[in-house]
Length: 105
Image (cartoon, rainbow, N blue to C red; front, side):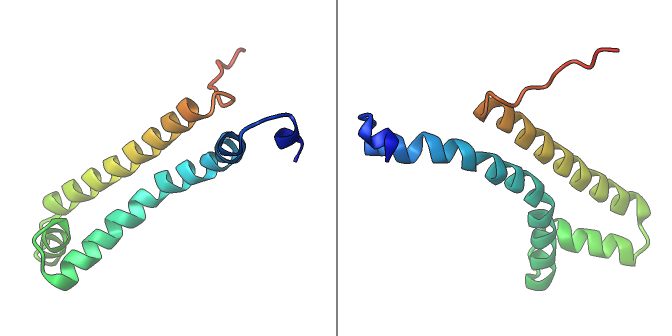
């Protein structure tokens, strides 16, 4: 009410202040949901029989081809780490109050 009394537009009132406060948990959650999305893709591809990483991973484990299984797990782990890094960098870019500081000894 105070901002509206000072002459702030309704659009700015809705978009500027609440979005700035609400964007941090949204970006963080999206970054950490990437492994769940990948796990869901693997499960869906096994159930539906679509040839993606899911059936290949399942066949490699059942046939004891551990090099292929380890490679697929490493790729999925790398995607998880990249997703986390991108969400952290996006958070720093979206909210200038969050900055990485050098640790001084």
